[in-house]
Image (cartoon, rainbow, N blue to C red; front, side, top):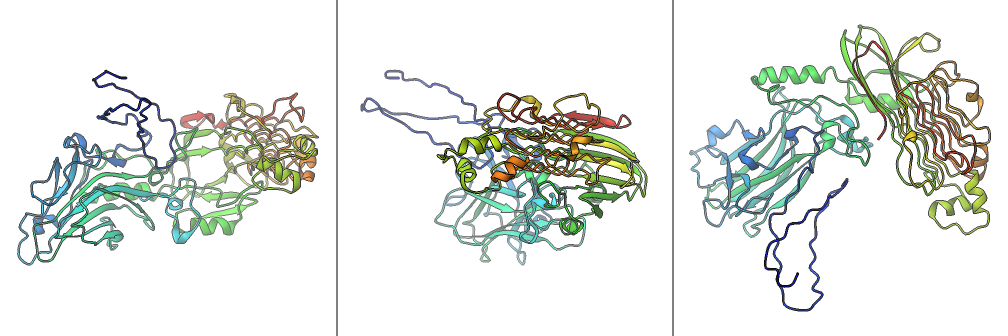
Amino acid sequence: MPGDNRWESASWELGLKTEPFYFTLKLENETGENCSVAVDNITMRDCFPDYLPAYHYCTFDENSTCGWHSGPYTNQSKLTWLMNRGPTPSKNTGPWADHTSQTDKGYYMYIEADTEVPKGRNPHAQLDSRLFLPPPLDSQNHSGGTVGPYGLCQVTFAYHKYGFDAYKLSLSAVFPCSDKQPKVLWVDNMYMWKNNVWKMQRVNLTEINEPFRLRFTAVKSLNDGHLADFALDDIALSPACFGRVISATRRYYADYHQFLTNQDLAGNLKEQCRLLNDMLNHTYKFNNCGAQGFRGPTESMCNMLYTYSLNKVKVTNGIQTWTVSQAGQYSITALGASGGSGAKSVGESNGAYVHGKFNLSKGQKIHILVGQKGWNSCSQIGFGDVNEICKGEESSENATYLAISGGGGGGGGATYVFLGELGTDDLTPLLIAGGGGGLGYNMTKPDSMVMGGWDPDHGSGESGYSYPSGAGGGGGWYGHADGLLPQAGKGVLYSAHPGQGGVACPAAKQQGWYSSGGFGGGGGGCFTGGGGGGYTGGNSSHENNVLGFINGRGGTSYIDPKAVDAAMERGI
């Protein structure tokens, strides 16, 4: 505003950001007159999720090291990592400000190269993190395999390496609880005496299957010169390292392990290793083993995926059976799968979350049917006019007929955890997390009833309603006669194909739509969406047009009354 020679404050809500991003401030001078603009005190508030441990990210501000400390070699070399703000003491080396705020008020860690290194000692210094549990296996992308739902486990950090004698900075994973050799993750051994700037680096954490620390090692040139400062700031581990995923609609994906507090790790190294190894050796994670669609995984698929884990399962018709190796109380978390999107639909349909603790006996067999996502109606492009609709290019007179025939998404499969003998009626559910309903064609806003577990009453245990000429209902625990329709999701009991998802309705399939329901009882789509699997399956519409409800209903959830610390949330 012309004439206002004063500071103004402004704030904006960023909303969800799932990819790296940056800000751009743009000045537009509409008057053409000479002017000046200044910007100061740019901060981000409440931008770091509270469902991650506090130690996942460290700016070193508020004079805190977040558990980072000097490594074991420091006492021999006499070089040590120090906390600092503003310029470093020695000239022609080091940063002038921290990376977080780019001011002399923020803190960072650095090495002062003026320190004399005892004769015969290697001129380097180590900075070690606290102990971490290994990341989930499918966040580490072993041998170039498929990345799991978490994404990749990565560490990001800002580093400043400047001065004629600044030789090498490296990052390694070290394993103090065993004799395993450190694993070098990243090295910068380029002399950087011309680059007096902070640099950002992102490093994947791979092939880590035991408790570990991260270790930064800075090495001066062998002539022990003094023109070499190293600095670190803004060190962060991604949510994938803790079995978390940032989603537009939910704030957790799986309970990989509980977060360890500083008090948990207050003992000596031997006690810390005992605690972490005890947690690690009794943590089991089961997933769909890479299977997609209306059928579950095979045993060979699960054997391949679980190669690096403690999971040893037998697979029957897609249902995984795990044998309890040690008696005790087990904390079990299950998540239902999402429903598929319809052509031109907007939004998401998420499965439910359920959790409980159960006393299990050694040798007891636990059956796990992991729900799979319902197919999006355009995920497998058909032919002709269907292809045009999915690309938004429909021009044919036949397009309207094809849309009425199909275009709805398949229902999401429920996740079932149960006891008993497979192939018999003597089965007892422990936990069931309802799957989300499929979204209908051209649906602009999902309603709450499309979410898995939307109804707090778990219901009768029957399968959802299937419209004979429309979408399939979701499979329930018991199932019923509608399960004979090909688009209907199948129940767990009283079914020749327990938990199998329904295929697209006959009219849609004939026209080239392939929106099947997910394994776990998801109903196949038609013009309307399929119902989600659950304890009670979600209904499909009683019509196959806009006169009925368009989206399939989500399946209900269930927790055995004997469970301790039970918790249940619908998809959000």
